[in-house]
Amino acid sequence: MQKQDLEKCVVAALETYNGKANIIQVATFIWQNYEKELHTSGDLFFTWQYDIRWAANRLRQKGIVRAADISPKGIWELSSRS
Image (cartoon, rainbow, N blue to C red; front, top):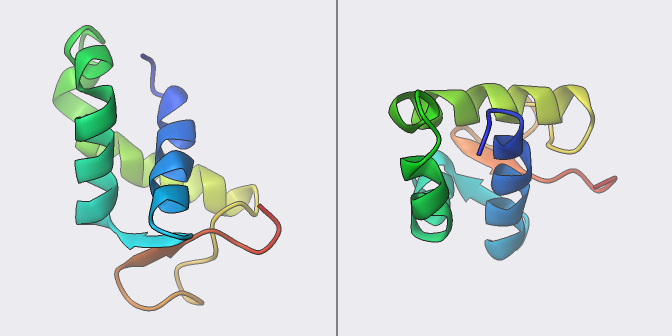
């Protein structure tokens, strides 16, 4: 697994939670579903919880995740365009 793969992981987590989740739910989903890949990902294993925040920012720039100022505080939401 590489950093860029975290975007698809974030989207998968949000889809699992009907399009919106808090960061704890997203991180839990990623750990439960990608633990093996994370363990073998080198340095990413130590930074993935930080890196999912940057993945969410990239997804916002692409219009896949709603802007932080539109979503409720602490909630990541898929946009209607995703």
